[in-house]
Length: 58
Image (cartoon, rainbow, N blue to C red):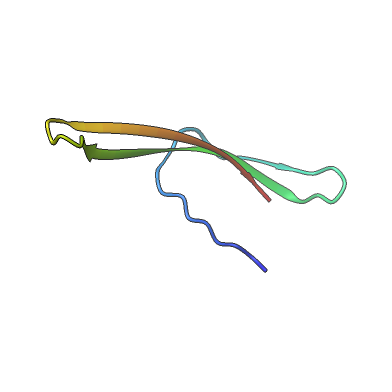
């Protein structure tokens, strides 16, 4: 069984690819920045929240 995850955002650095020593399996490592824009509860101003996600996958 596989799970599918989609990350939407901007790459913050180049993807790094390396291989394991024992099985030569490729591993990808990178970072994504996602920005969420929304209006405050009182409606007076807009706010912006940025989150950085560091991910590694095989």
